[in-house]
Length: 337
Image (cartoon, rainbow, N blue to C red; front, side):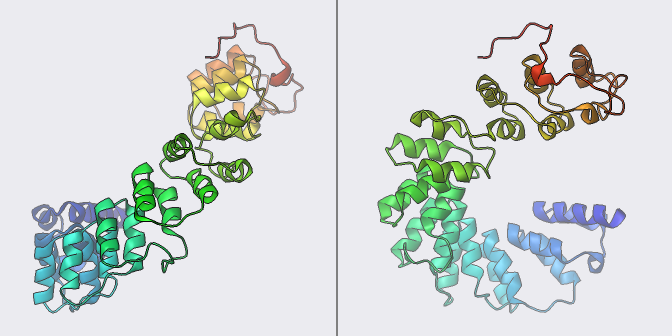
């Protein structure tokens, strides 16, 4: 535990470039892991890198230059070059992925070319200016060296601005692929909404297959315009994403929560969402095992008790009890907005 804490502390100090604090924590650099050194290089902290590397019996290595390229400090790169560090072949990719045009220029002046990998990483990183700069220098918009196309990367990792830029630059793409990939976007559904607003065509089946693996995407964006029912996993996706509005929509459509859904809500202490399910009788299956894990006198325990579920009469799960999905609550059912 002590070693883990020290490692975490060391990394935090290196990330912040806090060399004076690092000296107080452990002045003997030889006792430090090498990982914080690379962290300092990647953050561009020259003073920390000098102090740490001077404390090692270190040999100039191209990996030092590679990590420093991501840090964006020309001063640090110049110092490493003076110390005899060779330039790593992947350094331009590190610079591009972090959005450092000035570092790319520094590396090109020393004979390192930019390539399609750099462009792909700049797209994934959302660096619009770097993308334009690399395209102007001959990086290909089609047939990248990576397994995924540039537009695929943009659809997965970025928003409308990057997609719009690539389209403007002439990047080839398939419209239906673009919509399907946008359903898996790590930033949510904003890109999908924008594409639909722009008139892009949606392959409903492909998009629904994609969102089944991405519960944080609101599948109603796909089904509603086509008058289709919500997918069967819609309520579960609402639970996973902690989205009470989507949960209410699923309840209106007659979907029920299973035991796994209820357990997840209990573990996350989602009282309001549990209340919606209980008040509308939208839980299927025997949840007595879930009732047993609820802390006594907690809001969730009190909620279960109000609806007739408590540890006393559901202690071992063997007792016959009515299924919640068919039981009417005495509590007044609130209007779902």
